[in-house]
Each structure stands twice: as C-alpha cells, then as structure tokens.
Length: 237
Image (tube, rainbow, N blue to C red; front, side, top):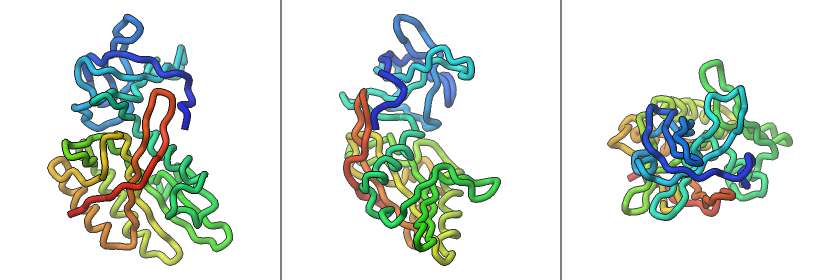
C-alpha cells in the first residue's frame, strides 16, 4: 500500500512524554507529535532517532499536526503505527496473498462481537454462509537473533481477544484466525514476549492447541509504501 496521506516528513525524535505523545524536531521546530503505538518502543523511539511522520496539516479535529509512522532502526525503516497492520492484511487478501482467507469473498473491518469486544475483521463466504473472526497484531520489537516479540508492553486486551476466539472457534461454521504482522524488516519470525506479558504467552500457547489458526507475515517498509512479503513462523516453544 502506498501511504495515502501524502509524503512523510522526516524528523528527529527527542523524548516520549507519555504513551501517545512525544516531542520531535520537525522542520526546525520542536513539535508535540502523536505516537501511533501504545507499546514501549524503547529500541526505536530513543533520543536522536530519525523518524518519519504523517503531516495532517491544520486539521481542527486533530490535537496534533504530526503523527509518527516510521522509525529508522539499524538503517531500516520500521513501521510503528499499529493501525497499519490490518490495512496490510486487507490489501494482501484482496490480491489473494493470504491463503487461509481465500475461501472468503467478504472481509469487513472493525466488526463488533458484542458491546465489549471488536475484532479487526469478520470474513464471510456468501455462498456457503461460513464466517470467520480475524484479529491482527502489529509486531515491531526484534531481538538480536531476528525474532519478533509481542507484546511490547503488557496487554490484557490481547489475551482477552485470544480467549474469545477460542470460544468462538467451537461454534459450527465459524473459524478464527490470529495474524501477527511483523513491521520490522529485520525479523524472521514471531514469538510471545513472556518476560513482558506471561499471561499472553500462556494464552497464545493454549490457543495454538485449539482450532484457532495462528499465522505471521513479514512486511516490507519504505518511506513511500508498505506491503506484506512472506509468511514467517510463529515460534511457541
């Protein structure tokens, strides 16, 4: 996908103020910018790091003009924006690059299960009536061995989604999928970050023993665009 909101603007990261806010040097000025990921991102958003931002212009509906989308890490661009992961999966599905979802001719985004839970997608086969619930997770943290780790910060919401998918998968005609999208090109696989969120790691391993299908894809990232390139392993041992 080509970035839909115009050319990205380069900046120098100064400091993170809280989960969703940071100071960045942009166009010769210090600007308060939106951080598009609730993870810790300590290896990416560190003082002096080069970042690429979306410029929303003078939009009165927004609290910040700029939002951080990419961070330069070991000479590679990493997409920190969590909301990009579902868009990459949708684009790949449209061109038939997600084998597990080829049997579905509809993929609806942001579908509510109930008033407490919303999944990234619901897939449907309009001919057979079969449906599937799909959850997508963005991965940015990669260790020295090239393994991506999720989550970067404790996430009860992520474990809750897994428990709900396990329950849904027991219903007739219903399938469930979890897709990890590795938005750091230095990674070669994905694994749960047990030292950060042991509950998620335990729940993911339980999920893998059910009918819920767990997969991962790697993304190629540049200043102009992003796309899924290949399937990569999910490592659960």
